[in-house]
Amino acid sequence: MTRLVRLATLTAALTLCGIAAPLSAQSNRSDSTAAVAAVEQFHAALAAGDSVRATALLATDVMVLESGAIQTRAEYLGHHLGADMAASKDSKAVRSLVQVRLIGGTAYVVSKSVTPPSGAEGSNGSEMAELMVLSKDASGWSIRAVHWSSRRRRA
Image (cartoon, rainbow, N blue to C red; front, side, top):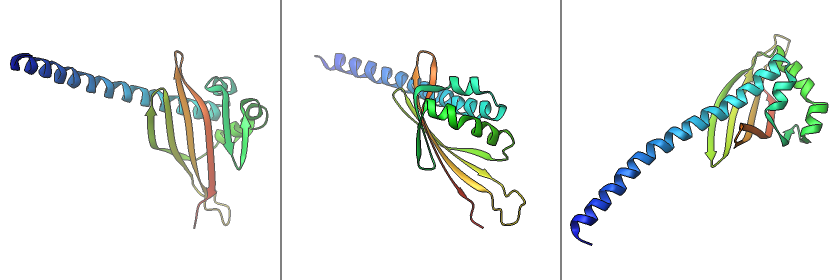
């Protein structure tokens, strides 16, 4: 291969890499935004008491971990969804996104919620950490696993 051909090949490869990197970054941003939107839609559905919309965002094999319990989709829908909707309806919690990580068609969305004191004597409010694992298919992002961990806020 002549030096000129090698230089042309190298230039073409670098140009393609330069184009591919921004497209990949745009795709990752788009996927991150869509995964976070699915989590936000789930929380909005809980707050609105919309069990149909909340259920539609859960994968058929979702696992929900909370307070040391592990629930299948059927167990969560039958025993805990109603309580989560009731608690979310009037919640004063402020959610903040901590991290979004994409690995192929999987997204890990980590957030934190802080609930202010209720005003009752000794109430300091609470903090909740949340991890949602989502997967992407032709219809969009589905929640595959939820892990909620909460505690009372320290004085």
